[in-house]
Image 1: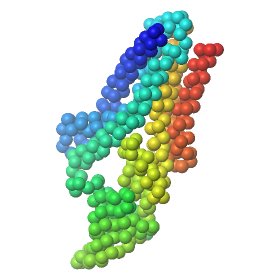
Image 2 (image 1 turned 90 degrees about the horizontal axis):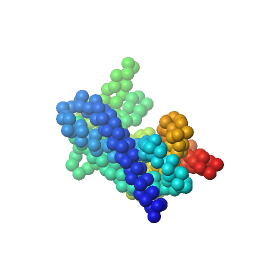
Image 3 (image 1 turned 180 degrees about the vertical axis):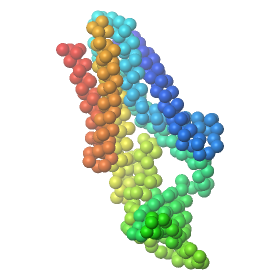
Image 4 (image 1 turned 120 degrees about the vertical axis):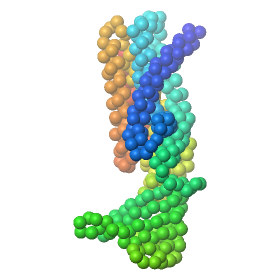
Length: 365
């Protein structure tokens, strides 16, 4: 009975601290992103404050997903530090309760919140980000054909200049673009580009080293259009570039990632970035648990012993070190230098083990 009351009380205190951290961090990121949208969009087109605020709110779930470990770190720090200052931890410890018993509710809640964050918040963030891009393009007057995907723009360097490719949509499974236009530019000696020719087509499918363009029509300066039919155009663009152009890892929800990875692997495409994103979401419960343990290790020192505020500050810094370590490993994982499993799980696992070791040593001697 006592254990149940303790867990309910600790859960209440944990939710209180997390609510304060969530409110503070959400307010900060909304204000910062609102200013960023005002600078990036408001200075280019005539847009109302409500439209800018709506764009910011659409991005908020994605920003919250990114900052979720910090919300838990500072939320648990706040709740435990508050209990410490009120000497409630002293009473709990004096009544024979171990640190593990006190931390049961926060640790379990961190794991549950991690599961919810990966399975519910992430799909919401992906959908919100997609809607954000659609509304931003509408405000910026980016023309789109109803019922088709986002327009595609590609650029590649050639021996005498460069080629710009525009298309109305990208069919990623077939590596095909619809209604493409190829603009071939040459560069003069002083670096000034001039349009040499333009080729329009119904579709263009990417093969090994060339585009296969159907219903091609060539237009040269001061000359009549010439129908060419099916032609091939050399290119240095590979299938991987088209795949990554179509799908950003952050834009794919938790539930769609396994199918996307399997399809891309069957097509012979590199999937390291997408596997890294998948394992990062799977490791989210462990990441939040590691943040909780860092906060606990920094605040379980009794307030009467002194230095509690300094320990709490060290705990906050330790959280930033974990985040930095995780970002470094993710960079190695994205380039293929580390397996995605190692890159995603190593930082939270090592941090959690170190925090557990510290708590065990101070609790059990």
